[in-house]
Amino acid sequence: MQGFDPAINYGPNDAGISAVTIILGIVGLIAISWLFGKIYAKVAKFFEGNDKNDS
Image (cartoon, rainbow, N blue to C red; front, side):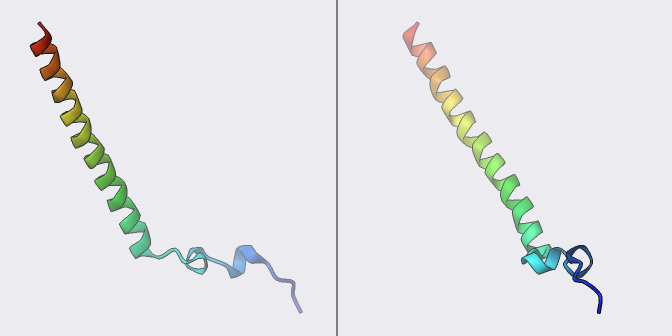
């Protein structure tokens, strides 16, 4: 009987990783970065407006 070699007997799907999980992770990262950009733009516009009012 041969010994157990985890490199041969396990693959990415054995850890619960599927194509759907990978795709959802990538879409989630894109959505979070887009949301961060929108929030940053709003904050930058707010402070830009404050600078004009102070002058």
